[in-house]
Amino acid sequence: METAVDFSQDLPSHVPSELVETFDLWNGEVADDMFGALERLQDRAVAKGGLVYNPYLKIWWAGGLDLVREIYQAPDLFSSRSLAGGIAEPGTPDLSAVLPFRLIPVVLDPPDHEHFKRLLTPLFATNVMEKSRPFFVKTIVDAIEKFADKGQTEIVSSLTGRVPALTFTRMFGLPEERGPEYADWNHTLFRGQDPERSEAAGKIIGALTELVERCRREPGDDLMSEVVNATVNGQPVDSNDALGIGFLLWMASLDTTTSHLSFQFWHMATHPEDQRRVRENPELIPGAVEECLRLYGTVNNGRILTRDTEFHGVKMLAGEKIGWASSAIGRDGTVFEDPNTFDPERSGNRHLAFGAGVHRCIGLHLARKMLILSMEELHRRVPPYRITEGMQAKPLSGLSLAFESIPISWDLEG
Image 1 (cartoon, rainbow, N blue to C red):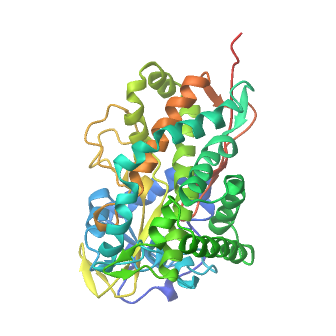
Image 2 (image 1 turned 30 degrees about the vertical axis):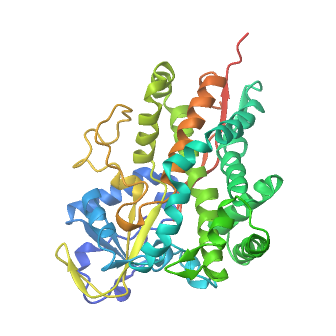
């Protein structure tokens, strides 16, 4: 977002003035046209060599998929020690800096990262997710059948937010009936302001503390029991690290998956020809899911410089932050042919919606399973759907892109 505020006095002396681009991830142009604004920002960054500097947020901003892949693959230079590289809305503290534990494994760099990833990766392996398929299908179908004969629904509350919440409670060994309450806490954590945001974090920590203590006393067959009673690098997982793992998985389960589900159904509701093509050719659903991940990467991510360096011809200093938009790099025209075209038969879809390198998302198999099964089951049970006439979807910008609501409707048969 362009602003009339003069940031020239705040510009670090090593930053060339021609690289300045001022924008706000939470308000203005990005809030009004999130994907268009982020793509235009990327275009300006690419035109200037791949990097620009935002004095408002005090961050470098990267444009281009290959450049971002370089960042992912150099954790010794671009550290993940703070969530999203410590990028936060002005006036709001970085979440990972105020929590009393580490958000494991995302804020760890090698070699500590590998120790914890060896514990967590098998818990989300493809074969483990396939064993849970009957539960996933039942959860999705039960949610859809509550509205399939109504002719309309607000799909964030009825499906894209509900299913991840129920899946999360089952995997964590938490009471299923509290899933919506947990999702509300998570929404406040991501979208709220203090003191509500801090109160939500406290509620999540309280619930996780009780869960960790219970899993130590009475281990079950749930994911958190596996974590709490495991060893890492020859040492038992301590309670603080168990809380950090639980808090991160809580956020990812109840925010990122919900957002990916919401964007894929918003796309189908607003692009009837794409929806028709996928309905007539259900074998294209996995490819359709990948295209939505590419086009609508939901996370604006970041890293922190560990040392002074020159990166792509630009001087950068230790402690500085660098960010990028997953949705924009997924529309990089130097990598993807017709980048803004939805093509479920696209080959070589090298998007980075799940990251890359050592921090590639451990839950990607779970996320893909949920995205594919949800589209399959909704299209089996609900006729072609659209945004309800006279209503609008309500998007949310920030560090993660999401929808507050998506009202859809369809014609009932007979």
